[in-house]
Image 1 (cartoon, protein in one colour):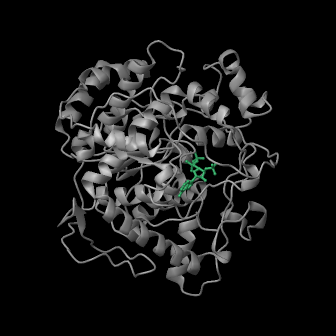
Image 2: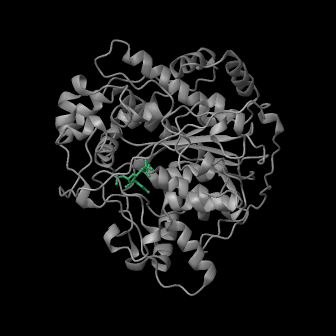
Image 3: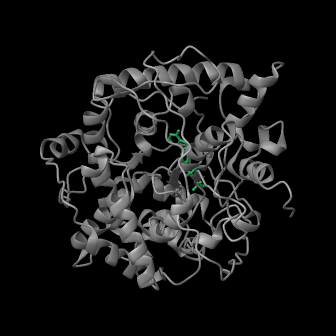
Length: 503
Ligand SMILES: Nc1ncnc2c1ncn2[C@@H]1O[C@H](COP(=O)(O)OS(=O)(=O)O)[C@@H](OP(=O)(O)O)[C@H]1O
């Protein structure tokens, strides 16, 4: 089945913030053009432990030189209200199925002593789009073409961006975004910053380091276009690999829904394993949770952790508001755009505009979704506990949910957004009709081609897709790529990019 159509934003019972909050946020926004981040980098680096002065200087000069200025970065520095009146997502299907879990040993690559390849070695290789014609939305299967870019209601030309960092946060619909980036890059022969030694992640949960990327130490890759595998973000290191004009973006999900997903998917981690349900974990988290235990970060402020921030804080901390403000400012400093999983299609439209891509470039099927059989319904009281336990993530989410709508308003306008979302959904529906047997996702046990089975973890039943029998080779290829799960696609790109590197 296709993802259910969302009701339009004003009518939607927003899972995270009430529409009152959202509107209030919009009304109270004032544009803050001050650069208030010099000290924040110190804050971040302090949290990240072990940063060198040279790195800081490197980063500062990079930030000074950065030219890409989406207005989003000038979004208001509003002080977060401490309100936490969100609604919980309705979940159905209480049945859960036990699954075996693979624990991969993570061997960190050692950095070699070599001259640093700083951003100055890069050159920009973007084609110019000058067409002002309307989107060719009728086309079912994407062929890369120029497209126009609309900004604040005025048609202007723009250059499609191809230097991109996507911070792939956990359980936030990030695999669907990754699939979009993979398809865009593969079809244009762009180069991905893939993990060394055919690893699937950039050595998460370690802080990202330059030498985690295949082709950096060997200097065999001169220009990286897209970095999008799971990592724990560290801007100073990422900036050593990626060109100066790189567009940075990420995605957040409502911390309550995210926690329920994390709990099911990472049921095998120490602090979850000994609990019989999420409530049981939350009731004992203050005493049972130990941050030093391996993989426990999946249980506490995981968004903050992925962004490279200190995730160890709850709503009981005296300095919560101060730390939340600093965390938000740090994210704003490093990222041009923050998407919201609850508004996935709206996010894709924003992304399309920010990157100057076409609608066909961002159309996608929902990947990595759980079967309803492995979802747990949550009580309102459980949701409140989650917001208290993940108080930092909750504040980060509230802030960027607000600024998301501010960005929509000033970049596209709500009416145009609505139109484009409808067109996107129509295109997706057409694609589903052509590509997908049965039109939607199925449980892994029903998958005909086991090579397309998504990775299964914990107690989550992760769904995949069966393809229609297709005779046209090009259409079959496009459909196949749309449903190829993350691990399989990463391996495929790796083999394309480094054909001589073997397992
Ligand atoms: N398009 C779209 N819209 C809304 N939600 C979506 C979408 N695509 C994926 N998802 C949901 O995101 C969850 C998987 O997130 P990730 O892919 O980031 O997970 S992972 O960290 O890479 O394992 C997973 O959530 P749960 O099903 O609740 O676990 C997916 O259902």
